[in-house]
Image 1 (cartoon, one colour):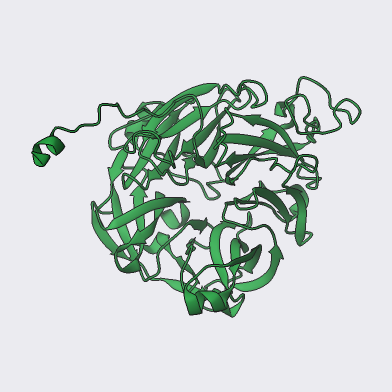
Image 2 (spheres, rainbow, N blue to C red):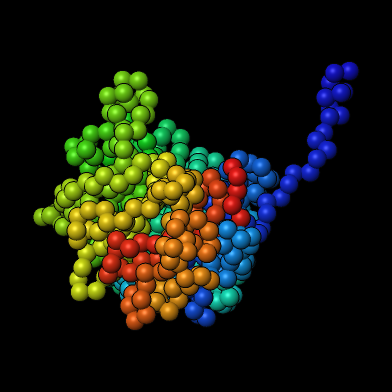
Length: 480
């Protein structure tokens, strides 16, 4: 009777579907300028608490950030397009097709995308993943900001390849090559093997598995001038900083295996107890910026427990040595903020000035801006001094950078003055004015609050990087 009773038990409640009008535990963020001059902001929501259908509870939203309402009002998003994916989405990149040399993705030119996507009049390709479904998604983004699923837009990975997360682009036309590949890192694999999934963006659905030595892979950064793909490892007893040379790997095969020659340096030789996080290559290809989480190494080795002590941004020199390999000299390590996050290099500054580098840290809910010319952090956006609440929301993680015209800067409804709004950044009417000046340069930064499910928009004049200003928040704030 018990078996009969159990067999007759069914969940009578339908599984709720993910909302398509809001962010929900956002992770990856990418920005693409449309031919109209408007921005398509692409945000991956993870359904992290599995409140919605695990198989389709993740989403990709393409929204117009300028037309979206502030969180202080109703937070309604100006949604251009939506697409359902599996839960636990990872990073997202927006690949620009056939772009000329320049910032940010195609310094040496890129081949065009797959013919099927070109026929759909796409202006870019969006690549992301689902750790829950063990799948990778490659969607077109057309000139109106709509997401297009072409042939083979969902790629199911083999069972032994777990947790696809980081996405890096390898685009090159050097030495007669015509490569447009995406490399997806795997947070886990059998026997802690290091695994990459390589996609051919010119041929939908074609991929192979690149096998590395242990440990696993977290995220990657490509140096187009040196032709190297750098790889980080989120957590392990050993912390190698590795790289491969993807331009010399064999051609992509269907469901094949490729072994890559791996070179590496031991971070312990530079900084004991440093765990690698996200990375980015400088605009001129001479330096590698690595976000580090500093932990108590003795406790890790003796008890296997991770006790965080702080965060840092390490700057490594990539000057080639006599073997045409990067010297990997540690130029400096600058205290930044605590927690994992993302690293993005801002567009090149004029007059040969060195990079500005943005870093997010989810534990402290902080964004820092590092000036490589000054060799120090020049701006920090953390807690509201009046309320103690994080200005960028709890769990600031996902980060995207976009150069815009100064005429596109955010102009709020009311001019801010200290007498009218003594507690700035408290509501839509209390944001300071954008620091961007007409006739000058302007850069936008987008930061996703993982725990409160909104996106903050900041603007900075790269000529005055200390003036990094929060100008708007979009999305419906969650009380998670």
